[in-house]
Length: 148
Image 1: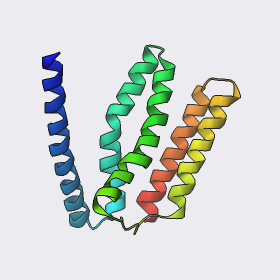
Image 2: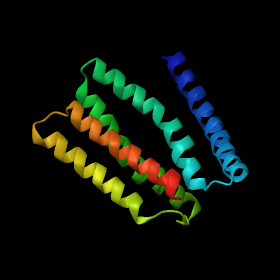
Image 3: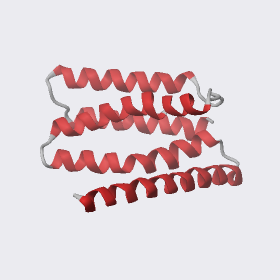
Image 4: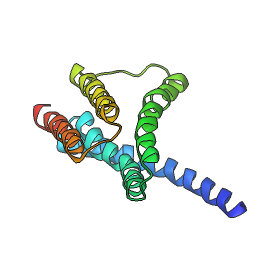
């Protein structure tokens, strides 16, 4: 029990330190490559911070723990929108939304609606539906990388 608490505290400290390094490095890369911070954020930070969720979801699916896999995705999105965005605003004040466009909101809503439709249709997600979700991701990131 004590070792678990110690590992938890060390992990939280390492996450805090590494997130600071990640953000600073992403800003530096964006400036050096003359690329918008939004594109760097979408590619480096989002993918980097989502890898643990991806691995956890894949492992849960391998073990046929499907509710855990879907719950992880849904709850992470709710947590990110409400807490990860809300807490810094409460602590540090308003956030300027400079490079945020309607397409971003459309993709968030579209992917949420599609997940809802796919999961409610026959209570399972098929490989074709997963492929369609990957296509949406590829199209959106292609848009971000080549149209910005």
